[in-house]
Each structure stands twice: as structure tokens, then as C-alpha cells.
Image 1: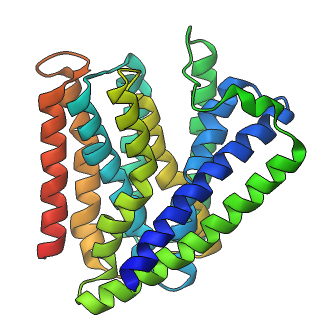
Image 2: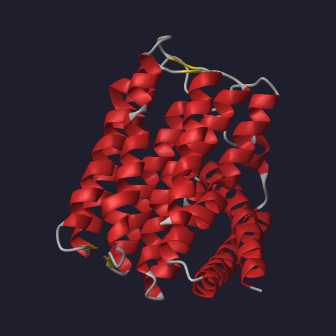
Length: 315
């Protein structure tokens, strides 16, 4: 029954996330917000909603390891699983913005999160507010840089959303909200039950099964695009997703309910894996072929992710 709850919860999160993205974009068009701002901010916030609801639900229920494990595991999955598989299917070109702006910011947020959790063994409200403010600064410079870029990729949404009726927007918003709430309830409940039944920690379930589940939409979209020989995935968008996961998901969750580190392995193992996967992208981007993530590099990332998952279950 626990596995059924987890699977149903994941389905509801995917459905809820999709409806929330569509309604958010449609509302943004109604408010005359530019496509560039919608693509860089609104869509990113909306696609982080599943992780946010799961982390918030877990923190409020006293399962803070799931809150942290979900975000840390999702960031690892975004690079090792999503980027790895996508690069295996279709090589990815690395733009200069990646190593000049997005990657340094991702590394900064990752290291800051480690020190926040290390000092006091928790992510406090003040630290959560700090992450949110830092995210606002990041978004300011992101939009500012995008205005001076000749071509900004903002095809994350359908132009038909510009003419959606108010009634349909409200229905989408309600469906998205209810599905996300129900999905997070079922997913956290099922994960806790499964961990208890199998005799493994909530942390392991969260950094593996839950993290992969909340990364499924990104994986599906990336694989489909790669198979169609379209722009497989923007490395900047993927890095941006990791930044949003740390700053908005954990930041907002901590403001509502401070997140306590219950498992030492989060600080002695998981977060180092997250930082390592983030760091390795720089040498991969330049060696041996400059500004290109080919199939061999994709295989290395994927094997690294498999090793991480295997070690998590064998601890």
C-alpha cells in the first residue's frame, strides 16, 4: 500500500505541477508580464512547486530529513540522471553564461547551504529569509543579463496560453493546487511507511525514490526533446532548477517551519555528493572537448548517479 501511495502521489505531483505551470503562465500573460520574465522566473517557480509542497509537508509533519533529502537528492538527480541521460542521447553544447554566471551561483548556494546546516544543525527562519533574498538578487541579475542577450530561450510554454479564459485559468489553478497538496500528502505518508516497513531511513527514501520522482518531469521533457533532435536541454535551465530548489524550496520551507538535521549522513555524505556533482561540471565542460558535454561524459555522470544510489541503499 505504501508503494501505491508513493506512485499515486508522484502522479498527482506531476499533474498538479503541469496545471500550475499552465495557469501561472496564463495569469502572467493576463498581467502583461514579458515572455522573457515569464520564462526565467514564473515557470521556474511553478516547476519547483512539487518539491516545495513535498518539503513543506514533510517539515510540518516532523520529517525534516525528507525535506532536505528531497532537495539534495533532486539536485543530484538533475545532474547525474537528467543531464547524464540527455547527454547520452544527444550531446549538449555549453554556453558561456554557464561558467561565467550560473555555475558559480549554483556552487555558492550549495556551499552556503552546507554551512547553514552545519552551524546549529538546522536551517533557521533567518537563514531561510537569507536564501530567499539571495534568490531575488540572483533573479535580478539573471533578468538584467537576459535583456542584453541577443537570443533568450523562453519556449517553455505554449503561446496559446495568452488567450485562455479566466474561468479556465481558475480551474487549472484549483486542479493544480489540490493535486499538489494531495500528492505531497500521499508521497510523504507512503515514503515514511515504506521506510519503516523496509527498515531503512526516511533520508534514504527521500534522496532516492522521492528525489527521482520529483525530477521525472524534467527527465521526460529532456529525453523527448533529445529524441526529437530539438534543443535537448539548456544547461542554464537545469542549473537554475538546482538554484531554485535550494533557495526557494528550502528557503520558503524554513521560513514556515525551521528544518532540523536529524540524520548525520545528510551532512557527512549526501550534501558532499551534491557539491561534487555540481563541481565536476566545470572540468567536464572544458576537457577534453571544450564547451561540449558528449555521450562519454553523459555515461560518466549516469554511472556516478548509479553509484550514489547503490551506496545510499547499502549503508
